[in-house]
Image 1 (tube, helix red, strand yellow):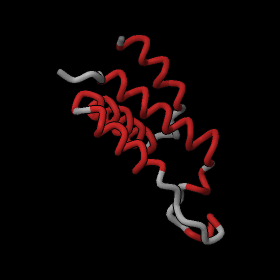
Image 2 (cartoon, rainbow, N blue to C red):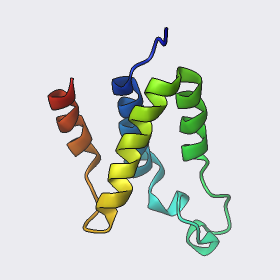
Image 3 (cartoon, rainbow, N blue to C red):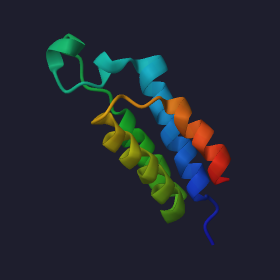
Length: 92
């Protein structure tokens, strides 16, 4: 039996999005090295992926669901990470 749920995975995705926005900043995550003044691109996604994969399939499903929604929404406008926290209340 898995100890972590889809809700746990969704929360990890929310935490990652907030970390990117509030702590790292966009410049640390962009592909263009010039924007990062030659520094290595942040490995934030890889770190969270390792954590969520260790948490199990249910957590990974929740994590991927939020990121899929985020990427899909990016074509219309940049989504607000707090919107996922508001949705979580409705999902739980």
